[in-house]
Amino acid sequence: MATRDTAELSQAHAPKEASLAAYSEFESELKRTLLHERHDKAKHELPYFEAAAHLSDADFTSFTQSDFETVRHAQVAYGHILFGKLKIPALAGSKNCYIHFRAFEPEPGTDKKAEVHSIHTERKEEPDGGFKYRALFTKEDPLEWFDT
Image (cartoon, rainbow, N blue to C red; front, side, top):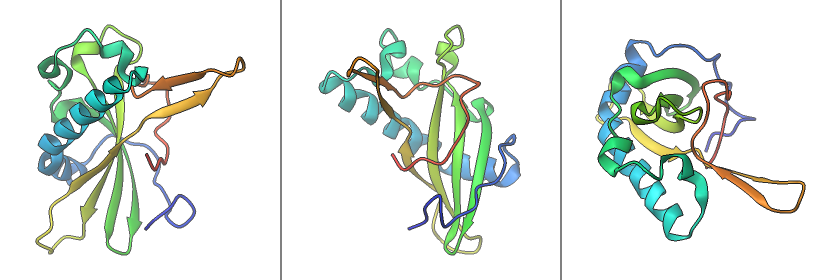
């Protein structure tokens, strides 16, 4: 499996034709994965999606391809790993209105489709010993390699 040490990640840029084509293959899966993460974290009372707590599932996943704003990719032996930044339109008035996702795009010419690997969630320890949880990011948060 590729890691940040074994795969070189491109600079962040607006999605081009190949990334948009891959996105169209996995958009439905991305929405299902995002809702699963949201419900799983809420079940355990972890506030990763706190900024979106007031949104219905339909509003939360009302994004489309036009909300896919930034991508980075890494070539690996078996295809491309894509890291994407996607705006949640229903949170546009909030500072934390982006998700970061990781996906895989197989090499052209195979019968495999692009697929979602994960939604980025972050848990940071605070100076007081508590934790800060988030899965919603700002426009300024860099899109970096993540494994979770």
